[in-house]
Length: 462
Image (cartoon, rainbow, N blue to C red; front, side):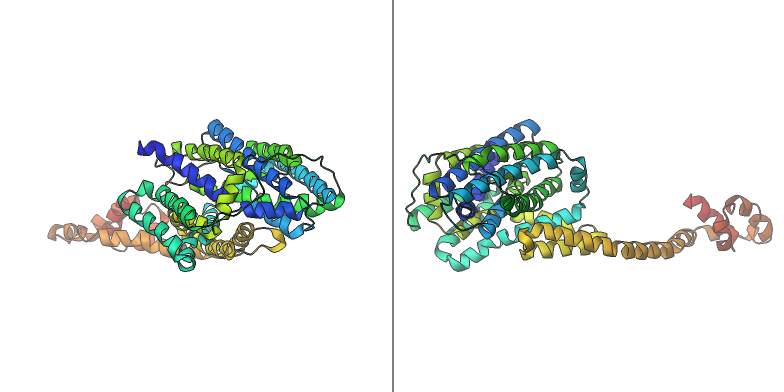
């Protein structure tokens, strides 16, 4: 029973964490490009429905834990580039046109085999380092929450630790239940204008050069770099290699479909993919797709009850919700760090990737995960030749002693047999016949002054 519930509970955690950790950013981004409160809530609703439908469809179709999410970096981009003119209908309609063009760009990227090859060419240590850098800030949330909100966060962490010791598979679900209880008991409910069943609003998108250049292209780049690339790398870290084309084409078409209703972008998830694809979702990797499908169902439920959901979650500090995600991802962080440093030849490049990704920098509105990967690849290209030559030199100098040493160490038992009294009177007669047969390889000849030793060593080495 526990094995059946484990991926289902992981999916519940996945959806709640994915929604709670960033829905405020999505609302702020839509308001920044001209949406009023009802339009922003409508955008949040259709995004939840699209994420849920795609998560269920892709999971059932490919039997892989492919979690789908809205573009959180894209929403942050909207906040930075938006007009901050809430209710400006012209700006909002132009933004909707930019959202639709972004979806079209996703589809075109999915039809490109070259882009797929570039993703699969990312070295595994760098992918692991990027994953570790993405997860580190979230895994620090429990520590920060205990310091800032000790009365609320400490029961969550204690419940997780106790269950981790005695019933590990229930540690994260137990922490989630305690979090909900803490929110209900200690946090005041905030009043919001949205009802339990929010209305869907629709506008006809318009197209302007300013919105296409200022919103569509940056939104495409940010989402591809920070979400889709990171999501594919995380799946590869756990041994899943789905085809990129159906992911990009379906998320692109979904983005185009939800654009008139306020949805800005739907894409492959990054952090929630790690929640579904990791071993805590299920020991059997062939059953972890259940977590992403369950997460899709919960996304739909959250969307349909968006008013109540926003009211409940908005009343609690975001750091408290992130505490559960951080606890759930600790094991994943450990695996990612291990994968990053396992290959000594690429360890330095992996460390560079990890440091830049964990820094959280976002030049030009592009997330730190992309820049970490770029920095790691650049460092790898810069130092790869020197490291390769030095290792070749070391192996070249160590190879002759390695081939000559075993004969010397393996021959002590042989000299007593050749140094017996009968062999002593005819050293040349006994040494000459073996010498041509064993020293037929020119490389052994210089090492064979005592020919019997060289003969036995050469025969043993071959």
